[in-house]
Length: 302
Image (cartoon, rainbow, N blue to C red; front, side):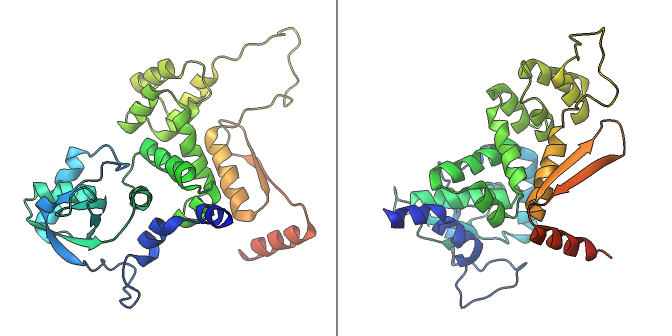
């Protein structure tokens, strides 16, 4: 039981294979150099992964990639595994977009790396490969993080470290999955940005507001104000003294606080009033050692 628990804490063999073990150790390569294919496989023997996390393939982007493939070929090999359902075929683990574009370019063979992954590892590698290549829209990326966390037991901290993302980036994207399906579709289709959608998460009528945002072409800041609604005073005869009210922080400010807190290892608070250029940044330390570390960081910029 203890061994199984420890295994779930790790990043999984699929992730290590993608990040380090995809090429043999005795054949080191430069970081920017393409991987060496194991073999060339006829394109008709390659089939897509039914659990591919990426659901949308933009025709214009596919045509652009197909033109590149016609000119230069497939530079980066696909990662495949023997198809469990058909011994004569290979199932795509990573690289379906290249496979689709190669068909448009009328290629007959594709360079591949053949790996013996189980179903869990296939899904893990497919998700991470797409995230690292920025091939997913925000909703697909958020769903990928959720799958990695709940299916494989990964934490936000571990994902952030492995993927080179900030923890707040992962947390903010996953919050988008709390939105109604209609708004998630708007984000997937590119009608709304992740920033716009994030501003609507706490609104009481997010779908109606989303339609207004699209129709009027509102900015993220304007969307945040729209989501908050008009401020209604409950006691107009006794207004609060100037400076005594508290301004609700926007999602971007909170995200920046999270990034700085993660980078410094200390609590960071940003007080910035909308419409103004100035503000206040507060760093809170808990021990003298943290204070010394902060002083050391600040002195590096001198």
